[in-house]
Image (cartoon, rainbow, N blue to C red):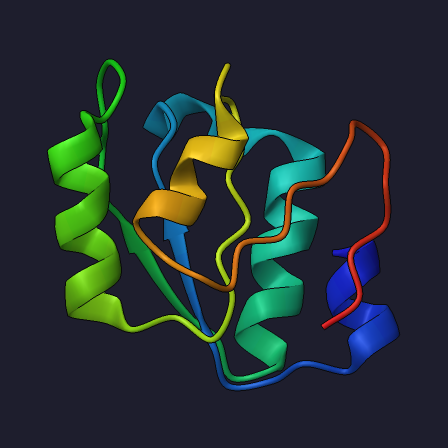
Length: 97
């Protein structure tokens, strides 16, 4: 939410892939309220396990993102084989788009 506020982003789409029970937590409710007030669509799409290289390749080819920032991976540089505009970031590093 801090990054979204800094950038002034609006009218986006948030894909929530965690357990639905977390949505009752105060911080999550605040975040979802912020998204709602700023025109974001909110979707719950549960995921399980880790995506294969082929699955990531398909997602990138379908979505055509402006930038790809791999998270929760042991090999973030490998995404450069799938998509040329990859930004690898370290923990706690701010991202500016």
